[in-house]
Length: 105
Image (cartoon, rainbow, N blue to C red):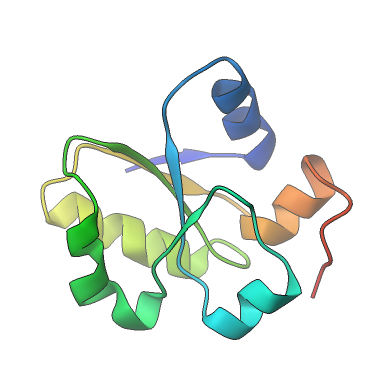
């Protein structure tokens, strides 16, 4: 599993890399703020929900602060996924570094 900051990931996405952001926060958290193109698979449903992801894909895992996303990234790595990134600091750090319009909580 790789780790990256939100600003580093944003640069990679802006340069054209095909990386899918997977948001593992719960539904109520998405009501507060969300990234528009992120796939939502709550960590509470991840053991079955990850089946919609392609093992050959590139995924950046996101949660509030980076703890739950690290768990999900570890799960995918153990399941044989090769290109998995944890976004350190989660959406909280994303709001600080990349998009200050996101509501923080």
